[in-house]
Length: 201
Ligand code: NI
Image (tube, rainbow, N blue to C red; front, top):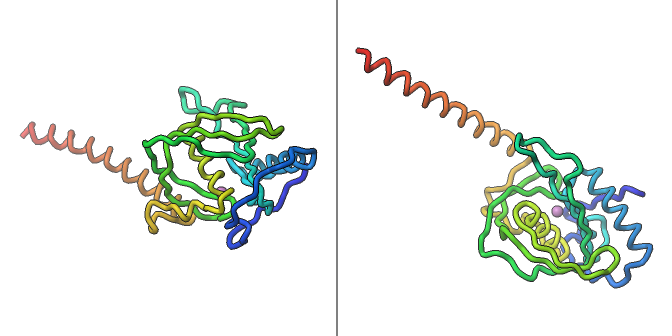
């Protein structure tokens, strides 16, 4: 298998509507295997063909690991999907905001609203018709990758122009939020103690 070069903005292939996959031949199988390897090497959860310079309706997606009761990753619990010519046939009215990044826009993240759940029709790597019902993060990844096949990027869909950060800014923001929540907890404890000491007077 070969790791492929990931194209980044402002490469125009990212803005083109991809053409349908017509032949599910050996060449396509090799391309799919290479895309899977490329996605994994880049620590991605999804990769669409335009991101490696091929304007065809094909994407690979690997879900996040499932977690056990203690919040630890369950080994081998990631699920791999290959989708060709996908269509979203239903989406929930319920939407959810979440933070997304993209291998073609390295170093940045942004907040995007997505349908909480979707139903998708597509073809698998052999051309067989498949139906998928997805929700939560998995549904988000599919929506992000299907957007790629239409030349749409997450930066087109930010909840607000301000909700776009460098990785560094986002990390610091999260860190501050975390520290604030710790301080709030400490304050609450402090209030209880103060009240107790006051009542002693
Ligand atoms: Ni992307």
